[in-house]
Amino acid sequence: MHTMKPEEYARALYGDVEVAPCPFTDDERRDLERTQELLVYVPAKMRATEMCRRWGFQANADFDADRLIRYTMTEESHWFVASASRTPELMYKSAVAARRQYEDEGLHGMDVRRYLAFAATHRLVFDTLPDQSYWTFLLSGAYDRSGISILGFDAHGHLSHHGWMKDFKAKFVGSRYAVLPPRLEINEHTHTLPRAYRGGGRNGREADMD
Image 1 (tube, rainbow, N blue to C red):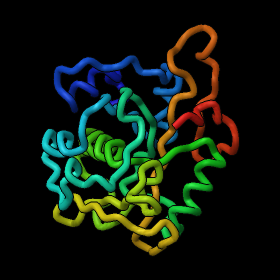
Image 2 (cartoon, one colour):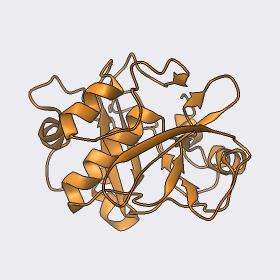
Image 3 (spheres, rainbow, N blue to C red):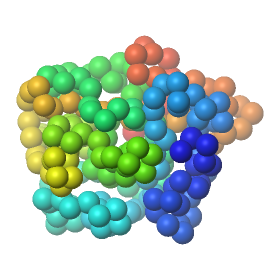
Image 4 (tube, rainbow, N blue to C red):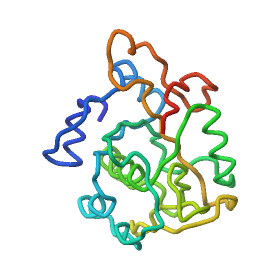
């Protein structure tokens, strides 16, 4: 996938849609093989239910009807980078602990739309779904006033969503990070800004704008 232009694989997922320019540089995109990460695109205003329908995800939730699910960055198209691992990380860490660790590194979390776009991209690249038989905290989303969403695929490829407690932890529940670009556009003044990296400390915190 990394040999394709960003616009090409965005259209492979979304069809003939207008794709926002990718704000990750050529060097940053080439580095994704080394860091074992994926570049993911989320179009503005595309509903989670529409995404499930487009990619054939059978979910236990009606995302349009469930008004307790809260989303992030719904009004703007955006790109992000995420781990390409088939399983989430930070197992047996609560959502509270995972969010604190990611924020210390300038990283963000998933919400439902980001997670669906990530799962579709993962399947496009590796021909398999991520997180089968695991749950993932959606750290940039929210459920109701004080809860959090967890999402994952079962062994049959069906998608399950539940509202959960932020301080819950278990061996089968982990988290996934999202790296937002450190710039709105690439130009002579912004192309050298450092992106955040998992384990990279405070470098790249320019992307703290979720």
